[in-house]
Image (cartoon, rainbow, N blue to C red; front, side, top):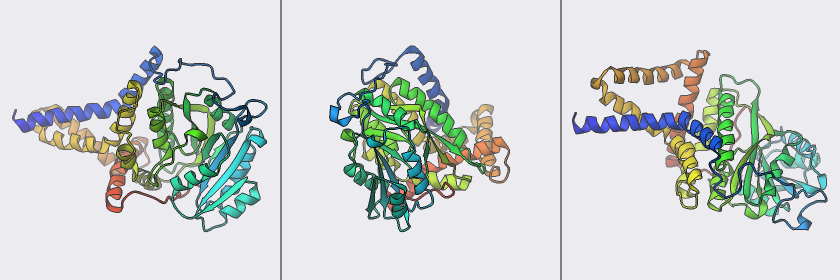
Length: 397
């Protein structure tokens, strides 16, 4: 072997191993850690019973039954088709009305979002200049009077008991962030996001039990008002809050019984466009906001960030290295010819999956699409700079 072949051999098996680990090995390790009772970076006992009265809140911050006042914030941009139903859903939640403040923050909407929100019974409607989702949420957090800030998308439908279940873990003062479970409804049009999300939610459930989740979702989550973090326009609550809370010594939890639903993007092309937009600000969060910096993490949470976040985001590069080094190693045995054939078969299946609905082709297309969206988002970030404004995914309203 020469130096090039030796290097290709190391890089090939390293890339292959990391890809297999992040998708399959990591959930298995989480399951083992959970079974062994390992984790709890913030120091609380595992599976600790949670009381109803949030620790650290003054008596005047809670109602007669010990529940905190919650501000439910809905950032909206041109949501006239769904905002009325969203307010109706919020007001129907099984939570004391006097302890619930519903805030709609309109991000420069040029339709009737604000008017419909007022007519539907929102407690406060903020009509803000167009500045992006993060800036809109920051303004709403400033205006909120609740001790807990809950957030939801305008097209998310919450179960009646979701808010109470979402708030309950804050009884432990070492909990800083809680997200619920979102399911996707409607015809998938070939989009496998619903199936992938079920896998992802299972992983987050294990993370929550071990050391805390590494990401949330925009449909249903909450933070303490006193611990709210104002993010830059390129920031994302979903990705930024969990790791930022960990650096403060606070736990970020997933509570699957706090449930919400949203309409699925009805096509694979639409899903690719949605994910591409989501990934534009990714590296501003990973590098600029310090996700990649391990300082402040406990060892188990650092392992989660490396395994579930950094390796996933590096997967386009790992696949590229895998393909190039496989080509270099073709003359080193039949195993490399077979492995190259498998890689090419996956790419061909992804292409065929655009026209053929057989499940293996759809799975290949979805996987390639998700991986490619990370690279496309980085490309868009390099060409156009960090994102500021936001757009709705077509077909989800």
